[in-house]
Length: 111
Image (tube, rainbow, N blue to C red):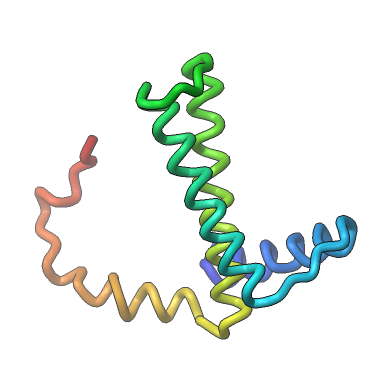
């Protein structure tokens, strides 16, 4: 799935969720919600790495971290949609234009 396809689907789900829960989806809401989700990701990361007062089972903490990463990505997709940013083009322009710098040893997974 390309980013644009996922972006459209996330946007639709967000619109339905907002309608069901009486949320007014403005540009400000989207950007502020993204910030909130980044904060929740930070909290989940600190908990998962044992640097927080929040405790839990490792699997539970890993699930929370995964969910917060997904929330950040989803909200970023919504922000991009609202601001007219083509994510596929933006990632290509900002990141993938540097692919010529990648060497074979760089392709090995990193911890």
